[in-house]
Length: 451
Image (cartoon, rainbow, N blue to C red):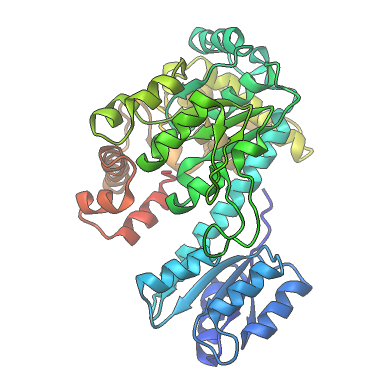
């Protein structure tokens, strides 16, 4: 897959800092430009495509906060990461309120800057990939057209067909990567609301302080930075379907407000007292056990019962092994068509290895694996030598691999997943359990493709 290089603009009045960042980032494959003050940085952003901006806070003339306000006024879409040698939590929060994506404190290690940029890059990639997937399954999301041959998946699709016409809320449960959003989209496309909007949002992807405004909207002047009215995602989905992924991440203080919308069909925007009627079918999804969250006091039981009028559980890929060859061939054919090349055939040994692997990342991991395989395989056949090297040492059963490095990596991945599960996905707490730094955990999660 040809990936476009990220264009990074460094705005700092210190020549040495700009030079250091250019050397570090160009070594990592970024395209770097420099500006010595905020005004020239803004001009550069307006004249061409800049993906990410690294901007110092304390500069002569317009400072970093003034720069953020100008970015907002001029409606510039670059991802902004602020830098300062005078870091404080209050300053970081103010930068976030003004629209910054992240904030790093000087002096920083080069790896810290690269990791922050990679996170921003991955965020942009996921947004683009999500849009691509939605376009691709438009008109293809009927239950009979979802790629499968297993009895377990057919039961799921039969249930989807039965409840699609209902207006009742549906809770979709399943591990990460099983395709919960595809099931939600299928419910929408096969309902009477299929001509209305389908709005999807991941509750864990929006800062808790902004989530209320994003969901319910806000009035102009409701808080600092609210320079215009915002209708919110419920209003955007009016007449259609709103899909809230990772509903278990919804802050406890917002849960009564969501419950009111379900019970009354109306909401109150932040900063307003007048209720607004909405006509939305709510679909939610979770990879967590919400009953455990209820017992832990993190999720309201009355909200759970309203959300789970119908509950659809998606089996993990390891529980429907017969779907693996079919899905693999589907991804191979799609990639071959995209790259305008012949479709290679898989050898029996490859099919056996794919079927035997546990796929902890489920269908998403399989798709990523096939993508990498197609990069290595340029011939008419996919054999074991074409596969990414890590696939040759992991399966459900044992193997003849005696590499200590391989064993340690498998053990690390297992413990990281267990720590994340034990802390409900809280990376800071997971790092403490593992007795490593948060930065080290981020590196390992990125290396092992753990979400």
